[in-house]
Length: 625
Image (cartoon, rainbow, N blue to C red; front, side):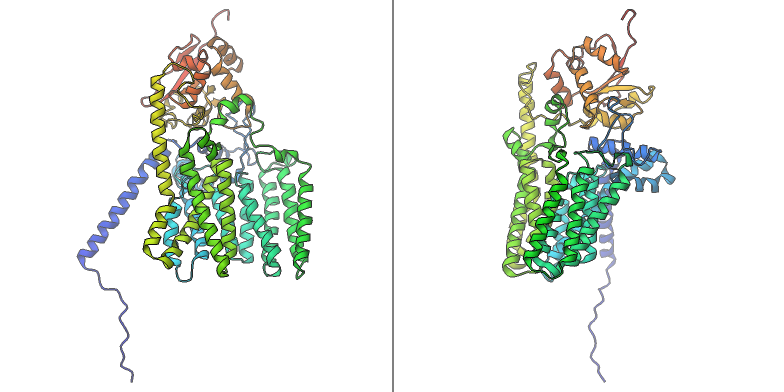
């Protein structure tokens, strides 16, 4: 009889003192999380959202849930000279609308919307982080899954600026696009047919949400095609699945989200017929070629790829709009005063050239470092014959493209680079820990972490801002002498957003307000008034009318205001936009209002305590006028 006793694997009982310490630690952690969340809750429930687009997104969802048609994405209280035409997709409204619909029966409409704006971005962020961990695990060396996962999570949390798109209140569409990008890469990571379907649908969804991620999605699609060219039959089924999912997804989402009367419209700033036609030709061509060429030689696949390429170009030739910039229709004066000062449209190189090196340090340098890490790991995978080579090549290609675009095109791409980079850096650090030890891991973590570059950029930004304010004080009264050409005209002080900031206007009968561009979206959200201007590039006539009023001498501005039938003038005192307009036209209406010289046809309205919103009521015309 075997009397060998098995080892006792049970955990030792915790002592009462140990249990108390754990309870105290857990309560302290909960308290820290609650304290960290309270400012976000207070801000969102006052409708003080991080960005103009967040305010407009909430207004869009609110109007839809109140009965506005699914296909009607116009904002009917905005840009009366242009009908408030927007270039957004209703798809981006779905996550917040779903949460709001669940909350409204218990909390009411407005509170339900606020809760949805509060929790939807972090929920999308959790899903995105889970997908990033899934990708990193596919890259992990055998036996190091726990290490890779534990490194990937903090790397994702440090992925600035992509992290900011998942903060409470950040309900704009960028977070959803990042989630779709991660879903596409995760779907391709396993090499399965099911994953390929997920990837194809994710690419289609991201394109219909917005075109900002189109360059990286082209890389994803090109990877699938190139993998088929090189691997042939071994990836044939996955290639067919991806191409069919992409084509069917694009066609179905196009039909579902765009009104039938606009199916033939040629919009170059949002997904439309000009994008659908070549995309469907490419997807169908790839699916047919992969289905027909079962075991043919490499040359046959390359010939098929060349034919597909020619067909895609032929499908695109009737649409010269594809070569136009998304902002090509913006009025030249609006481009100079407003659009050229929007921070996310800067590139890292432009930041260096215009005296804003902190942009390159905070956004561009982490992307370069992550690209280097990905390229090194891809080279190592190729050198060792690793089965992870394909995924490393995809990740390296995506990082190289986003890094180049962030440096020479627009910094908004750096968010995509940051999240992709967090995966590459996490896998690289896990390899360092396994092969080189703790010291190499710590050095690598310090060198590759975006926290270091971000902190350096933030400190430099604060220093530059302090120098700018000091110079401005020294030459007060001299137009343009102290304000650099790159001053952003799109940043609002916190006291110019939220229901409290606009409390002085909520009791008035709804009317048309002439607003500076960056006041428009927060005012739409906080009041029932109609606004003339908000930062949306399709509405040239309304935006130009607003700037013409603020730049005109007060007497001429009065005639323009009365011709529009506007009843209010609303600005944000101290905002960069007001400074830019006042300096451009020292004799204009904005300069007069900023200096306290209120013309006789305006009557100041009381401003709530702590608010930087300044509003004036347009008085009835004098007799004989």
